[in-house]
Length: 282
Image (cartoon, rainbow, N blue to C red; front, side):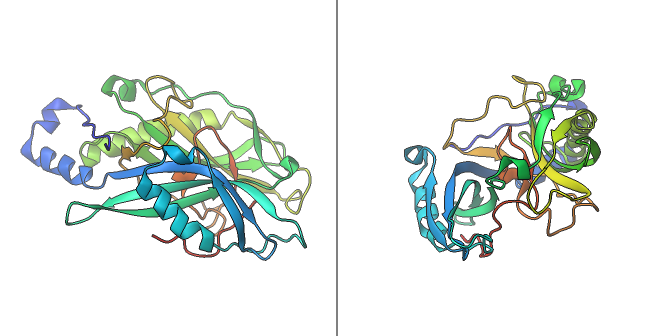
């Protein structure tokens, strides 16, 4: 069963009929999704050799059928290896979109693939201070996930950062949603500017002037600003997706892919690892 939660806040505003109508309109933008993880094996020419999915039996049968129908036909940009098969971690964001007849259509809405096989080619967090949970969000019982894009300099310090997307687990009016997205984003950015990273020392991008990493920051009342307790694997999560922002130093090609396909607690080095060439499909 999909999670349905209502955000009770700013009571005098929500009591207004116009505000209720606004909140209902926001609720209709809610998405039900599931994060599926595993590994993919890709031949040098970019065609699939095989894949494995974590905890396959825990997934609903329609999700199993969707993955089995689409993944064998995926193709990737050539790996650059003459003969070696690339084995990469993978996470998929499976989305259930409501249809007019009351049913749901399943799609793979986003994908994320692990970095290069050599850890020395990827950006990795060295020190990470968890953000403080904003008092206003904690008092209202608001939770969600902030997806950061972080520009990392050659000394391992943060040059710049933006909140690429903020997804909330509760709904309210547009005004309320913007307010709480901003609270969670600001708390994440304040913490991120103090983080330090291990930067690539080998590989084709070792001499780059900077690197870009995508990092999720999960807020819930059980773990302030850190990777809190998530839903059990194989269960649907209902949330309100926030608007997507762009960083001028990342660019559309580098920052491609879906932010919410990156698992909590991980760091994705943009521009490294496998790149999907074919459409994900539905």
